[in-house]
Image (cartoon, rainbow, N blue to C red; front, top):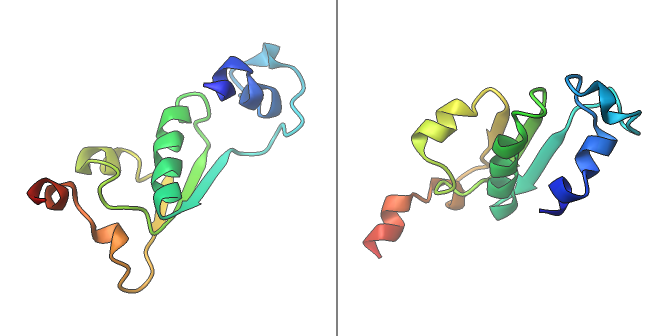
Amino acid sequence: NDLHRRNILSRLLPSNADPDCGRGACRGFKLVFTGHSLGAGCAAILSTMFRPKYPDLQCFSYCPPGCTASIGLSKDCEDYVTSIVVGNDIIPRVKVQNFELL
């Protein structure tokens, strides 16, 4: 993908483990992913992909679809992904099993 190919994040947010990365414009800042609804699911998946390189990253997911991740993955990322569900929103309560019934 473009983020990897062009080293965009590495140039902006060099990890502490990568001293040859140069002086990033955002050195000292943490990487934060956020999104709403389907974007929240994408943010959670991206944060899981980038977690090995940026162990301090955080993700804030507003009303993520419930079918985005397995229970195991949800447990694995509970330290860095915060999901916020508002009221009776149905999207966060959607499950893969419900789609399989269709």
